Length: 357
Image (cartoon, rainbow, N blue to C red; front, side, top):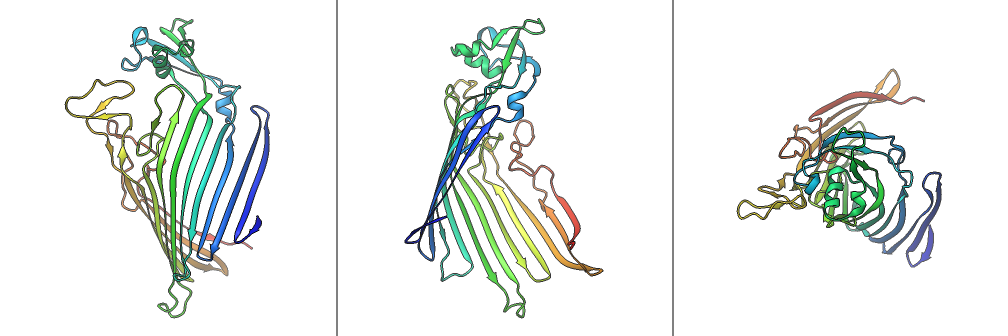
């Protein structure tokens, strides 16, 4: 941290990394904070980050499967034909590179002690992202005239199926994510109510409003998946979490509410019931493209105990108190996004902890 005067400070870092498999990369971060008055602090950060290819992406020995090209995806000679697909790693992968910019502010007004509110806008651009096309995708691109994809489809040399498809990950995608993070907290001392004991009520809430999550593979039309509640790479419009904690010298109780907003099944789908356009692999038609959001409630209780002179803690935790269902796919009933869904239902944990000297 380097003071610049007038309430401004600079912070930065540089890191050099040399991977034996994917080469040399430099990552860095530069940040600036400015506090013009005691109540407000402004901040901004610019950084370059990387993700090196993992062992599976590099060294996967080979996963084979057989299937049939989807008739609504492939056309011509591939439509309905059988294939044998081999997925292997790629030793020529480079690290993914991400450039991130964040701008934000923190408000801690002196007229409201214990209150804090922050808001941060962020944008991340990822280049050379590692991704992969599989048999149906490769066949579709080949029939659209991309000859490099046609080279990955050949007659099956073993004669097991009609065609043999080679599929490996490579650096070709670009990703852009934008959003706004919000966080608010309020700590209220309750000493006067509880006869001078150091009791507190703490309220806290966090939320992220995603504005964009676009993947561009350089071939297909880029799709913004914000508000799409299915799939692991999509993001709801809103993700939120709030908590209330009542804390005393002998015990603590916390209630948590968490969830995501409602959204679509897929942003590329065309929703219609009459006079529908022709359904295509890129833009299928559907009569309902809505998936509900979800809200979960958790409870946690802890109490200090002493057994045989040893200090400890008794705890009881209940997650998904009301046994709320996960976000479900409409056609299968399976969870659409395990990242934001509670798949286990209501769960209880009870136990004790002891400190050892």
